[in-house]
Amino acid sequence: MSAGADNGSTDRVAVITGGASGIGLATAEHLAASGHRVALLDQQGDLAEKSAKELRNSGYAALGGQVDVTDRDAVDAALTKVRTEFGPIDVIVTSAGIDGDVPFVDLTLEAWNRLIEVNLTGTFNAVQAAVPDMIEKGWGRIITISSSSAQSGAPNRAHYVASKGGVIALTKALAFELSPLGITANTIPPSIIDTPMAQNGVKTGVVPDLDALATMTPVRRTGTPDDVASAAAFLASDKAGFITGQIIGVNGGWYL
Image (tube, rainbow, N blue to C red; front, top):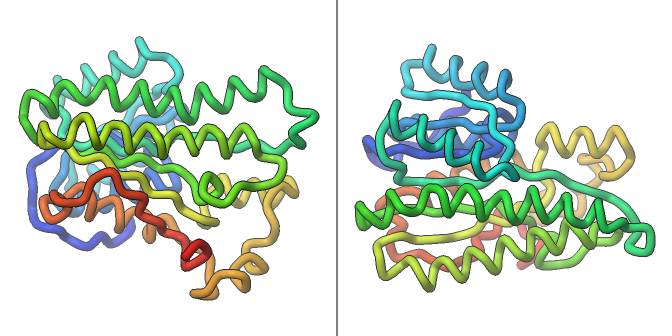
């Protein structure tokens, strides 16, 4: 398990979509280390439960569940289970997402809709399902995981870039609407992070070799899930109460 910086013990409930591996799992580990009861939701239900069990074995309160974020009924049911097990939701981290690589002229409407459905509508589903608890408490943290490609653009990824750009815009809209109610909303757009998704991209030729990409980064390394998780854990803390509507780049200096 990753070592997380303790931002002060808490007894809050955090839901992490895409929580079975990569950035989502690292975020769950950091939040658990700071005292959160964490729910790891992922389309890979068995892996989510396995990851949650490892957290429980380390002494943390964690549960895992299978959820397709495009299925609103499934999202609502999963969050109802979280409330039954742990109580109202204080923090939502939306890490669930998929990638795509196809020239724009070859991009089908089906592929376009699928990326938007998972990355943008999935984020909407998870956040909207969790927000009523935060409104009732007068405190909450919304942390979305977007992408630095939404800031820079990227070839052969029009659908992915558009979906993540939508996540950034949605987060800013939520900050304006919900911050007066005690709920902050911020987004983290990582650059290349060494995750299972990135490694799969390397294998399929969609993503260049990560060591080669590291030479293009001012800090001269690729990012790790812990790099992103550390930022997310801070944004979830009381210390980040005056930060909202922000794009917190965790990118090694690629986009200064």
